[in-house]
Image 1 (tube, rainbow, N blue to C red):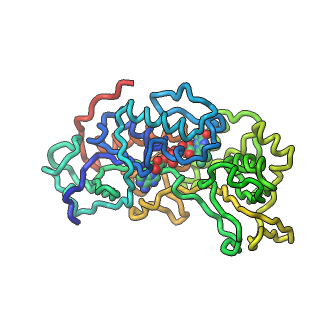
Image 2 (tube, rainbow, N blue to C red):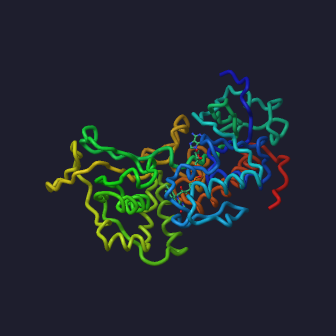
Image 3 (tube, helix red, strand yellow):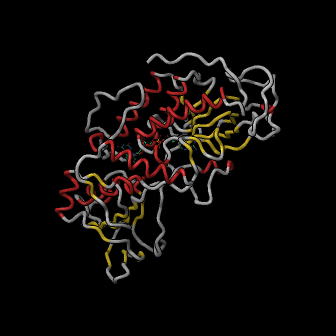
Length: 400
Ligand SMILES: Cc1cc2nc3c(=O)[nH]c(=O)nc-3n(C[C@H](O)[C@H](O)[C@H](O)COP(=O)(O)OP(=O)(O)OC[C@H]3O[C@@H](n4cnc5c(N)ncnc54)[C@H](O)[C@@H]3O)c2cc1C
């Protein structure tokens, strides 16, 4: 490989959503400097992470449990404004306040092992981003080999990686026989822009999560008819979701990823919070649910008991999967299909951290994971005798 133009940095953060910004904040806190010791790369056009793409009718008052980023509250937001605008503006201000210098739009195409022939395996005289100590570094199991982060704007050679790419880029489309012959519209909830597109239409909504319920209730107000279809009977949760329940839900997902299994959806562990809108939806019959249909036909859906429903559109509110394709060259996956984790670091490569993944796939989880990853990486790069980087000149913390 030709290393001309490759930029050496200590840490690359991929993604500037809640998880990536929290990680960047804490990297600064433990002494890494933005754009020198670490870079944040994001392929979306604007600040806001995935929030910038969420449908305009998802107003701020409909978002529950959104935690502020570390170090700066979100204040004075108009609850009737779209969350995409409120959170986009908040993230924008956050990035400026802490000088996080997010590079966008920059797409990370792949992350691969730098290999033993990279210039950074040389003990001295190598290009440094500022924290690399001079002098020989004993080779541990990973030596000083770097991760090569290949992007749409060149390549970075990083000692550690914080991956915070969320799930928005990988909507999950279930497969049903007949999808190819269905004559109406089929779309994913990621493409939903509000109920108007469904006025006077007959709509089948597939999925048992919060997005499915919110979109179904909106569409039902203007559609000619709706049918709700879920794989399992939905579990509606009455009463508040306390800290203890939160911890138990997170522990269940954490156990799965510790075993190298793919994380489950949030709703599968938390249930659907009962709201006034849901109560009304159940009373009116909109939230009466059918099991999954067997197949689609040119004009609708058919169940295995012979039931049929005519439909003009099928909306798949079937969730998302972690957007991790760019990490494939690192071979982090276990035979169970997931990535085995220890805290935020991947079991197979302690340089690689996943934040906003599995148990940290919530705004509060992302905040905590961002901090844990920054602290762990600081320790790995400065203290781990296997990596042998010794003490560095990292000092200081940010003001607030
Ligand atoms: C409709 C909806 C409502 C939600 N409401 C809540 C809520 O109320 N409370 C809550 O706690 N959680 C909520 N969540 C979950 C929520 O998405 C997470 O809590 C959190 O916002 C995710 O942050 P993130 O940083 O992990 O991901 P994201 O916000 O998705 O950020 C990931 C970033 O990575 C970038 N990226 C991805 N791939 C690449 C690549 N290859 N190269 C460069 N950049 C890349 C993307 O552009 C994006 O900016 C909701 C989710 C959905 C879908």
